Image 1 (tube, helix red, strand yellow):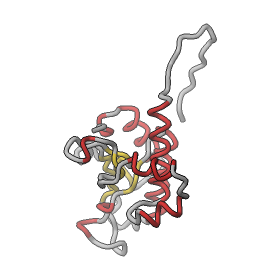
Image 2 (cartoon, rainbow, N blue to C red):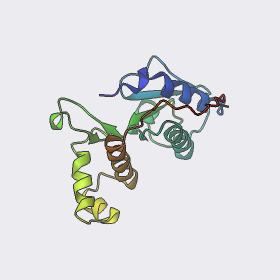
Image 3 (cartoon, rainbow, N blue to C red):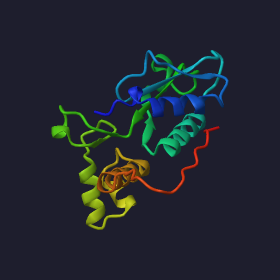
Length: 170
């Protein structure tokens, strides 16, 4: 299992993104394992799904890791009409030794990344896969492709004689 809550690059990137929002704060106490927890600090804030997806999208773009907004974002299990107290970001591709022999799966379900890749390789379209596996969405399929790409061609840092220019992140 990847422990994203212990990855300093991901945590620092998330904290930098959250500075754009006066009412969101990273919660170190609730973040563990493959879960990043964000606390809504203004009690009357109506947090909508677009804001959650915006934070998720920025984090994915900055870290190149696929996340999803967990269903547990609601305050005490309340519905969307009530104010949220936490946003929970989880890894989209997970690996658990107790499930599917530790093979990478999608959102903790028993749908393996290889199952989706096999369907794509056999010529099924995104639409056909989503009809075949209604628990998935198109972001899950894209995450499988990204996962496969990183497994086949992981980033490599090679020594070079070229000068490197370092810039600070905003």
